[in-house]
Length: 119
Image 1 (cartoon, rainbow, N blue to C red):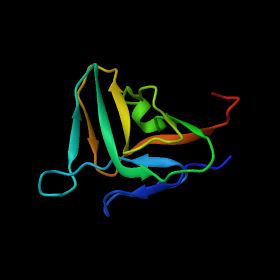
Image 2: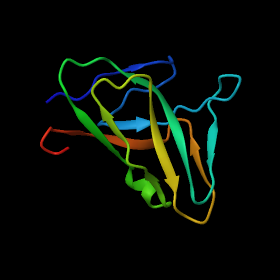
Image 3: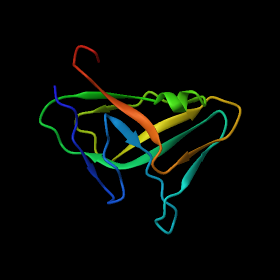
Image 4: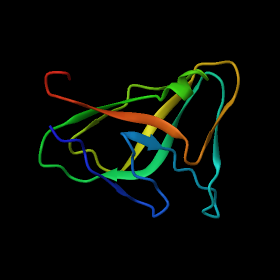
């Protein structure tokens, strides 16, 4: 099974390295910025990437990198299936009691390919 091929929607977006997706957060001037993630809230964070159409069926589960989990930030049940259209967004949930900030370029999720038997 092949991993999904990702392509940039924006020139400043970064392709995954070792399966890690990075936040793509820009302000109104197009400069790198931060996203506020209040306590007990969930927010979609863009990656600036989209999935190239694939010929094979595949599923991908996204999990949070360890550094986010240490701050009580988790990925909310994000699964990409073949045929997904549009920007890949990662739903992050702040389960803690303090506001967290997600900066442009932060590792926010890891793509884990699943076989049909895993789904």
